Image (cartoon, rainbow, N blue to C red):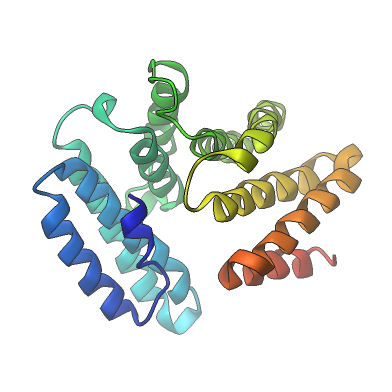
Length: 230
């Protein structure tokens, strides 16, 4: 999966998709399900490029293609055969897609429950950041449904994993740490009044790290802080 991530957000969308399709052709020979999820992830990564109103049809198309590739992935067999990363990516795409396009929160929750609570992974098979991101996605779904207390418990589980993410053995550890800290910090700032000071500090840490490792993440964090007057 990491080799796919190297093409995200680089160059034109046309070049990114051209490279992704070449990688898909090679990866599908080894693991067709994983190749579909990886291709879905590339489509999903391009959605945010087209969220301005005059480009939204392209955003919809990339989200639709992401969903179609996720469906193709689990059409290969039971999702119980997914890796932790596959569960994480597929569930996030299904969560973020609107219902009218094929998104389905119930399906995403089922996948996340399978990955988090019903599967016995081998030691080291699930990276701490992957587990944290799945708890965050589950919390997003529950919070959206009005279960703020339940969502808080999910984010608390993700929060506990921050020290493990800081020392995990992965090439993109810092970027994943930024993602996790930003998501947790924004949730606590928006929903847990007594933790606003802590959440500001966490968001500050995320921003400082993003400045070092990812211009794209830095811009996103600054935009979220600006919306909140921070």
